[in-house]
Image (cartoon, rainbow, N blue to C red; front, side, top):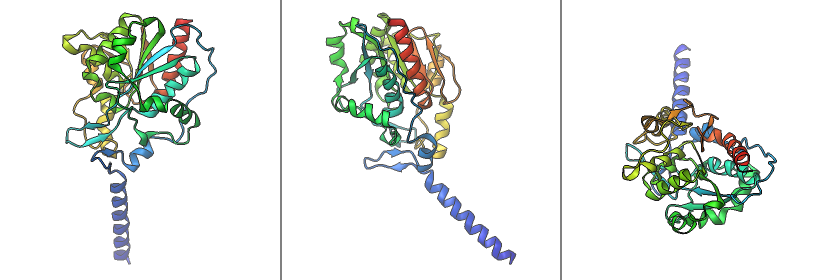
Length: 300
């Protein structure tokens, strides 16, 4: 009898091991990249966000535009050579945009070369009516955004129309944008003209672009909330990333003199001078509220 029980337990354990193995394997996509595993999606995404539909006293002034710099890149290479299927995190982009739009601001949507915006659609909150609505409202702009180069050549002179630059997060913000001289020029333009810069999660990687061509890092000594490298290092264990990242973001920013205000991928947000940052997708609602109320207080 005992032998039969042991055999039965062994079989059950084997089945559990197989199920766990399957659920933590990143999913291979048609282009050879990997999206998060079933378990990772269960743990890291949700069908509805925590967006608070606040009725702000809408901004009525001239500085109503917010330049939103999206990535047009999809695949981020890991140390092991595997590609992570990424882009802009939809919650990190659209929830802050909801708050800013409710506060009376409008968006100028750009990508580095004018190619379509790429979203991590596996993270899209499919049952969130507010997020779906703003995505559909701006879908045509996401599909045919303006070229950042054209903005630099044509629109930068219209400084009186802009309130802020917003760089959404998502691991896609680590592809090309930190090495893009035009992104660096745009952030310097915002900084020099007293505009706000808003970003979260991996979006602060864009701030590294200000150091290109031996430029001085503009944010030394600033307090920031950023997605922690320690969390990125753990995610391959549940199949979120298909391997370890080539380099960490929070460690790099810390080495440049940034004061990191969070150690977890949580709801932390912080404002330091004209920079507003958030820690993770979980901070999207809090970042949107902070950005909206701050702009209204400063500009009205």
